[in-house]
Image (cartoon, rainbow, N blue to C red; front, side):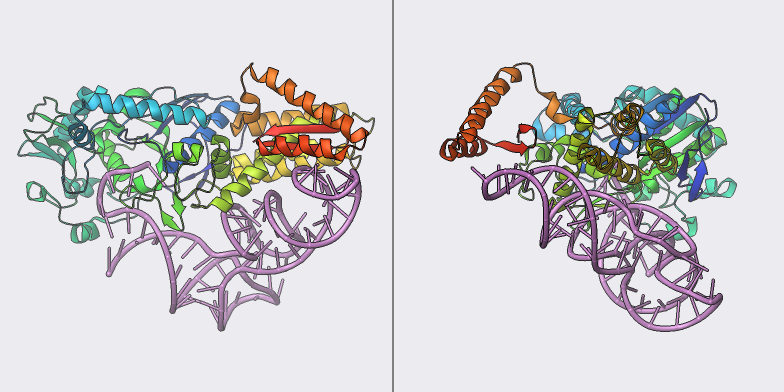
Length: 490
RNA sequence: GGUUCCUUAGCCGAGUGGUUAGGCACCGGUCUGCAAAACCGUUUACGGCGGUUCGAAUCCGCCAGGAACCUCCA
């Protein structure tokens, strides 16, 4: 496993060489979606970011177990019905079983991820399917003395914990400030300190999602599932834990506290956080009501969207920014990404048209090395893409005779695209996704263009322009090149 | 209020103490019956003010503007 992959560890606040605990195996846990609504751009970013990591680690030869949880219980909602389970609330509103809601949105989430060509994780555990593990974990923390029971709920004792460990080491907070600045929330009086957080929450009588526990009927606390399921599937110590920056505090901070309290040590060696997506410079969020679902992007059906954007355009757009930077959405930016992506795809297709020469004027190997350097530098996909654009210029120049490729160069540049564009960055050529019945009508279009060619030969401009203009009106893009006419259906 | 972070050309977005990121748009050119498309070439930059330095957009300080977290969120 010779490589120089370094990744930015939020815990250390610097890039570190990635060294797995048990090479060639790598354990990786990423916070997945809460399935109570349609996936939006904000879900795409971590999914794609850690999909790249998953793919690249495998490319380097690691055997990766990638766990991404499904949150279908637990988190609290902060509006009028404070304290009510998110899933339960939606269920009651629509008179459906909670699990029916979960299944519905999970199916849709999977569909969106498939469209984005995000690989399935190795395991996708549901929080609701791991209640026993979570109860056991809570008991372990209780036994160690870092939690207390209060009116049927169990709370983590932050102050007590902070005497033996340091609460806040991930997010850079200190407990004294937390105690003085945390807002007053419902149920606060049950807690010894406002900074304490729930490990197990007592269910009110009307609460639908509930499970029996040693402390009465209730449901697991907000941060418990990740600790319990991460431990179950990856062990008490594992390599990588990822998620959005918004989860840094309190979610991931609490996870660290839970594992240190229960096991006496950190579970995670490398913490990775992707940055947020903004719309007009402002973060996208449920409470802000400015989020756009992925389906809306794919169909263009949203008032802020000037057109539909294909899944690959979204993927490419996200990869054109580094995962630790915010990326600002706009129609202009997405359209720029779409054009750039199509240019790369076309260049890849055009490799086949290069006529091999006996001498070479290009150095594909150095491009390949630079791409690896970029990937190794904390997954710098924008840089990888910039080198693919350099490769694109070389291909185009080869076609006009301004560069010469040997057969070995042609093979090398094909492999460059296959490795980085398709295998590691997970792009796919969407135009080639058409079904078999496309063949018949595409031959019909070819025939029309042949007629147009004849008309042009006869200088019958009226006929040739009529064919061109009417095909264009139907949505075809007609491209007259030196070696004949090609077309594309937009 | 506390903590953290950001500010790069028309737009998006990398990076670095001294040498062209890249894409899109614009402009010029090639191609074309005319176009479109495609391709080639090219211009515009590092929020402001100080400081460190032979040299800073890159390091430090201050100021301005913006954002995130502290509360569900990817």
